[in-house]
Image (cartoon, helix red, strand yellow):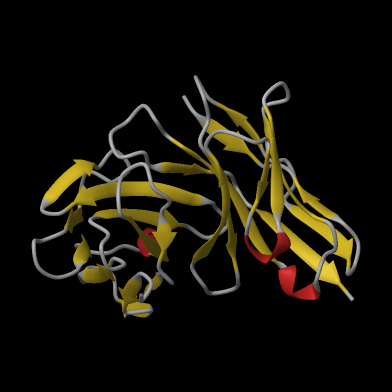
Length: 113
Length: 115
């Protein structure tokens, strides 16, 4: 059983461009969480999705950020018009049920020039 | 609001010595507590969790954690440290008051094990 997959592992964007981060949960997991790790900071929750539905987006910035988890395919975290402050490691986690352990992917390290 | 605190930014131990990484929590009701480890440029690996039951929880790679309700602590321990245990350790609590049970993390503790 493959673990949580994230791609790309590294992403470089110039200010104003768009960043798309992908997450494929573990097989059988329908719950996906996105977290962000800013330099010198801990991990902060961004959004929780369950197939086709956003359940909790309380940690997501109101502007420029969006997330989806379509019926088919990976979950996508999209950042429009990136700024330097978006540079961070973005981690995806999945679980088979809301009360179960969350397992993390290797992360996408976004660098905004 | 639920939170966890890791009072030490860094812990240094000699190989073969016991190690402790501290974590305290603040929650309403019964806590769901977790420990994760992060190696450089890698994702988080699950070590162990406390939901209910025995206060001493055993996890991966020889780690264990002791849940102490009176002291609101959930310290991570290992009887004999290895150099390969050097990594960043995160304590987390599950937020039970919002749909989805997001994890709330401590700031992390850098563990350095010297030969």
